[in-house]
Length: 370
Image 1 (cartoon, one colour):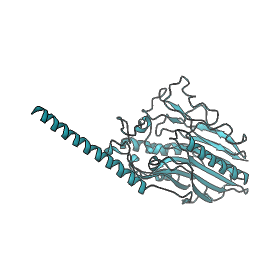
Image 2: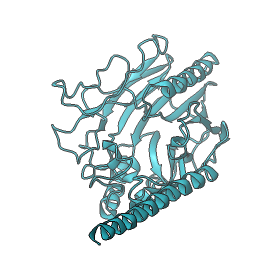
Image 3: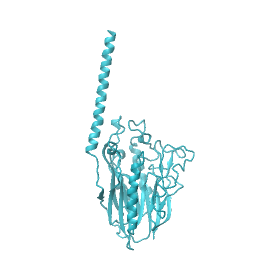
Image 4: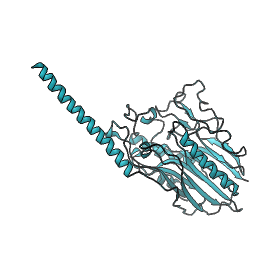
C-alpha cells in the first residue's frame, strides 16, 4: 500500500513537472514568435524628420561647441544597478530590471540641469527614451527639447522592441517594451539628416531583443562653402568575438574618409563602447579590481592627422553591476569625439557629476573650423 502511494505521488509530481516544462516551452516559443513578427527592420537609409524651429540654416561661426552624453535612458543613475550587468538572462538575482519610478523621475529631472549648465551649439545624446517601460514611458526627447526650444532637433530610433522578455524566468518582471534612440540638438538647422543602419547583427534570436545600431548623420552648410557633417553614434556593446564591432567600424571609416575627401568638416561623437586608441581600459583602476573589459580602437584605424578627443583624467562610464561607489565601482572611458584634420580642437572636458543621473558622464568639446 505504501509503495502504491509513493508511486502515485511520483506520477503526479512528474505530471506537474511535465506541465510546467510544457508551459515554459510555450511561453518561450510565444515570445520568439511575437518577437520575430514584430521585429524592427529599418532600411539602410532613412531620412530623419527635422524640427527646425527658428534655428539659422547656415553655420556662420567657425568657433563651435559640442556635448556628447549617453543618458542611460533615465534609469541608470548612481543609485541604480542593472540585472543584465551580471548576466541576468534568466533571473534578476535581486537586481533592478528597471529602477523604481521615483529614481527614474529624479534622474530625468537632473538631465536639464546638466544641459543648462553646459551651453553648446550641438548636443549628441544617446539612449534617449521616448516610450519605454524601463523609463515609465517618459519622453526624454521632449524633456531636452524644452530646455533648448530654439534648437533644431532630430531623433533616430535604435531600440524598438515590443517586448523584451528577459529575465526569462520572471515573466511578471520582464524588461518590456522599448522605444529609444539618438537625440541630436543643434543651434543650426541641418540641411539634411539621415539614419544610417550599421552593418553586423547578432544571431537569431538575440537580435530580436537587442538594439539596431545606427549613425545619425547631419549636414550643415557653412558660410564659407564647405559642409559640416556631424555624426551621433552608439556602437555595439555585447559582441563577444568583436566581429560586429569590426564591420561597423569599417563602415564608419569608409563613410568618414569619403566625406573628408569631398572637402567637408567631420565631427563624430557618442558612446563608442570601446576605449580610444592607446588608452588603457583600466586606467582608473590600475590595481586590477575591474569586472568588465572594453577593447581599444586600433591605433591605425584612421589616418594619423585625424584626432581622437577625450579627457584622460575623468572616466565617462561605470559598471552598473552595483550602485555607484566612488573609488570601488569600476570605471573607464568610452565616450569621446573624433574630428577630421580640418577641425582644430581647443578644449575638451568630461563633466564629472559622479554618475548622478546616468551610468555615463557627458563630454564637451570646443573646436574651430579651419
